[in-house]
Length: 526
Image (cartoon, rainbow, N blue to C red):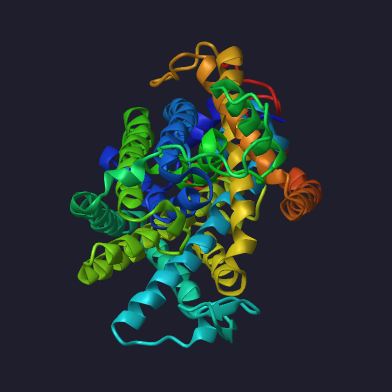
């Protein structure tokens, strides 16, 4: 069964959610999700372990790849402005079963990602509290069984619960229940704070950069290849791609290290996709959605590259594999006051990331519930706040549990697997709809079609394969999908509104019969 494009567009017109977001809100929404873990955590790790100063090239590569996917999202978001994002796009192209799987993938991408970010937020928060003389008990700063270490590396406690992370998710959840307009306002303020901090780091840090530390831009590969190995550029790139696909991390640095770092930091860009979940609450989605997605992507790519240039110019790249690399750089500058500013900016930045991720997850569940694939309570809109409040509370509680009781390692890779699989399907959806719905109104069209969506899908699959090379990630992911598919056949397929021939409820809240047979396009829709 497949939902027609006409149905999806009609559901948008009949939607209950408040349409209050303009282009600026959407750009800031994307920046709010993108700038966070990437700049404040991942840059140092990727530079130290894989790319060295070449991390700047890695961000250019990744920014280009994300642009391919972003252009596909922009086309779909302008033509199909709905809350479900990639879920709804897949429903229109590959049918209900594929849409259910997409929903499972988005649960990994948004739900677990919010919890992952909350754990990072907790680290900066605890550090800042320590700086001002407030000491959070170590056992309350980590998940059960996780060892808590001091600055020297000595174990000082074993975690019981990550209380700051749990509380942070709880507060964000309450804000989202209160209303998307209020949430967007808070997000705009937070984005302004953290972007200001990042720009200050770039401007102030530029005075302390030692250009000699940028050379060589691409460090010599370690360990060295056997004598006689062909070391021209194309052979190095080919070996790097093979290593990414097979999960081989034996070598670091060199061109292979730069490409591997691009795979690692790909996940620092995930926020741009969250903009598309706000389609049903955008005032003018045909114009605003492409601006929001591509605008956030371009701005963040520039900030990432400049931040990395300062970071590796101030601190030798081999020393950057720490939890707070930017704070380390400010210490190297001899500006302890700026460390406070950076930690506050990091806390603000990660707060907005949690906000956008939870927002995206609730909107996906809202749409799936309206389709009958999840219980109807998840689509209940609060009479005053006009938000899916029951849905938001349930998602928030689940994310609080994950943030408080699961380790960072247990949360990270699964988020990335869900994201990459979803991105690949979105690129394929653009191709599918161009073939099957040639006359569909597309306010924004992906340029250089079909090259851009094909390249986007291929790159996503390559990176997905690199993650699936890890047994623990692969096993959990396959079991998770299997359980999810069983639930679909036990519940979703029987309760599906499309399967029962019932259209999604409109603004009056009453379902009505579809004017055509289930799975059949209405006249005029191809």
